[in-house]
Image (cartoon, rainbow, N blue to C red; front, side, top):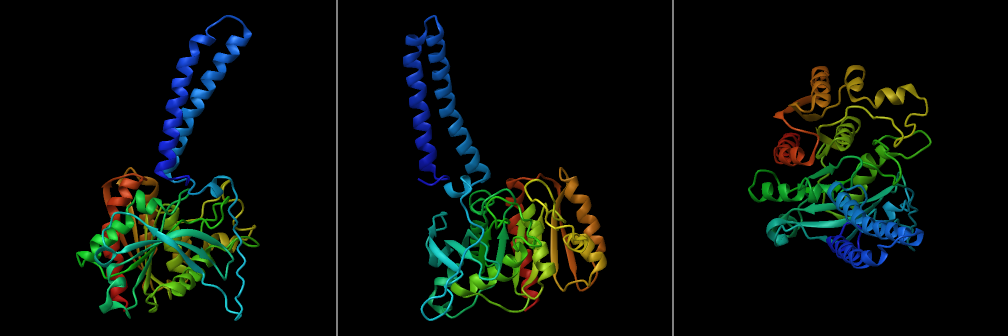
Amino acid sequence: MGLTSQTFLLFLVVIAVALAALVLWLWPRAAKKGIPALLSRLGLLAVAQLGILSVLLVAANNEFGFYSTWNELLGRNSSKQELKGGKDGKRPPALVVKGQESVGLGPKEKAGQVDRIEIRGPVSGLGMDGFAYLPPQYFQKEHENDRFPVIVAITGQPGVSKNLITQIKVPQAASRAIVAKQIRPTIVLMVRPSVVADRDTNCTDVPGGPQAMTFFNQDLPIAVNDVYRADNSRGGWGAVGNSTGGYCALKAAMTNPARYGAAAGLSADLFARQDRDTGDLYAGNKQIRNESDLTWRLEHMAPPPVSLLLAASSKGEEKYYEPMLKFAGKAKAPTKVDKLVREEGGHNFQTWREEYPEVLRWLDKELTARR
């Protein structure tokens, strides 16, 4: 059973109830005087609490998405993957479709499909699991030769890509917008920001370490194009993310405008935070540290030809709202910065879920204008 499956959670609930019943049944037999009886009662209490705690921890993990697999929980994920060529000397595809994810969209020819995918970066050597939403037109005969624009959606840290489906409901929002003809038929790639199982890399090319930004700027496009019919017009891809994922999305567009013509950051950090989860991201290199600050880039580097959208609430998200205003004030053409301001909101899934439909429409508009 998968770590995040409802079957596993239900199994733990049944076990917890059974343990509680067992404790109630055995308790009178342990209600005696003496050390052995005392130890028996303590043991029964520990067993009951273990069952309840297991249910609570798995439910919390399902809600907030700290770990998506047993390997991640046990720290077995490898950040390096060796790509070996086949007999003809060619490398294998950088993206592998592992199956389809049921998200209640309806028939794929009418609402689209969500693939479970594994990405293995041929440039950075890094990899991750994720999801890809394919629009209904992708499966329709009259569009069988069409190529589709791509939006890369990145969740926050810590978090797993499945949060974009279960919590923010990105493919559901994209499907509705496409069916309603509010946006063009679009492929939406859904990933997490960290490409290393036990480290928050903040989408940074760490000197002597993981090349996380390279993964997003080079490996993702290679992977998508290996399998899907993607439109590779200059600046024709978009990126969007929440929290740390928002920083990644904005940074990808600012550092690779030839690929990402527009990006949106929801409650986004504007610099790469360093803490015990990130370790040293810069190896003492002041220039790398400066260039990881997106506001510094606007002030001191040539403005990239991209459209950026920052979203924050004026009440409840002051730590993101004020930096957003400063960032927007530093923008110079050809960089365009728009703001999505809510009166009230928080750093949470509900806020981002409500913002995504408008953000998807904004991305489509900006990317269409660049064609």
